[in-house]
Length: 132
Figure 1 (cartoon, rainbow, N blue to C red):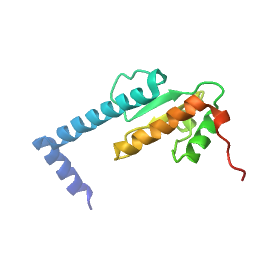
Figure 2: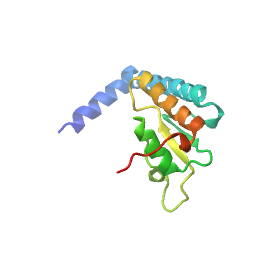
Figure 3: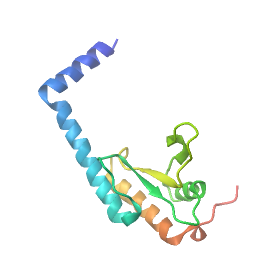
Figure 4: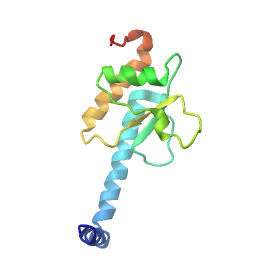
């Protein structure tokens, strides 16, 4: 029922330039947030070839991906399991995927990145998982 209306709205946005404006804003936001991640996390965040709404962060020893995700959750940062981004049976990278694009408030993105940076500096010995 809504599909014809949605198609009409999208066609109008393409015709009047609204779609292009939205795309430019998203690309600009992605680039700004990537720069923020590089500023806070430094060279640990590798270069990217295109504006993306996420960055891959390789984890230093002795961090293990599951432990890093669990410790981040303790500090209020939700990270997905890395293996959900790996197709088929390819090896899972020893890294976490930091999404910078879904949170509308850039201050919360910055806060999350600072938590991650602190974890990288203090290492897993600076954290303990509460007993279940």
